[in-house]
Image (cartoon, rainbow, N blue to C red; front, top):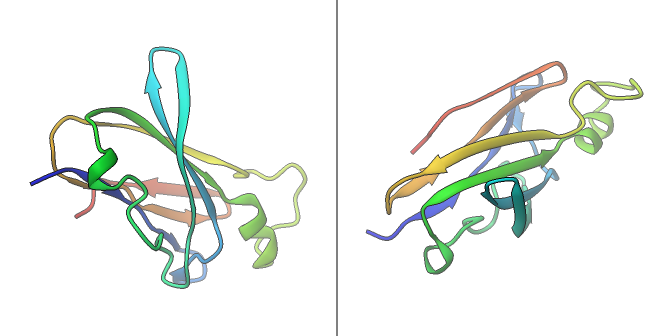
Length: 117
């Protein structure tokens, strides 16, 4: 099995998928970050294709950055300036050729993640 990476965002405050959130994926090496992919969540809160497909997969350290601020404002969940959660970075490692799924469970004042399937 070849490796690949998927993600999705669920809005736990509204109880639905979070549509329209921009996501950037970075490869991390020491203090260096190199952007390797970008995507936007669809109506199901997922990206249309794996954010890191099999043909581009390599083990290592990565960081997903979820640009949540516009979504939280658009859905009327916050009007603060600055926002408490304008961007959510999640750094993680992928040590084997496998399917990794890194979801974001989001509310205006908190988030969680896990290695999904």
